[in-house]
Length: 174
Image (cartoon, rainbow, N blue to C red; front, side, top):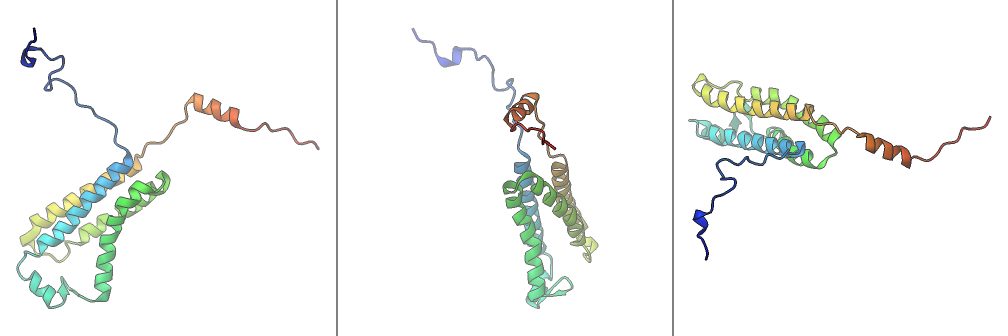
């Protein structure tokens, strides 16, 4: 005789069982943070187009106080390309090099993010305050993650194995 599945008590009902919490590699954290940073960076620029007069200024060849030309476009591309490439850098370079580059770039981008609000009217203070605040929080997260990158420690067994694999050295005769 079969009993229905609904009458069999569960050992660990879903509401009481603990969720699995695996340790995420630092590289994945950094790539996720740079990806989030890029989404904010792009959407802040996109949403800024909705401010009155911005599109007209762009059509007239001006962005904020700068004339749109080859230099402006190249600088803008560079400012966008660096965080985009940091996603790749964070996941592909060796740990020591990735850590150093993440620390340097994130530290340099904090002032870049803050300067982006220079010259803006107080009318959009909340918009720029929130967006820059979120960007800076992500950059601080990147700095913290890179700074506290776990170090590999050698266990006594690993040390013993490495000692066994070293060639025997004989003293040189005089």
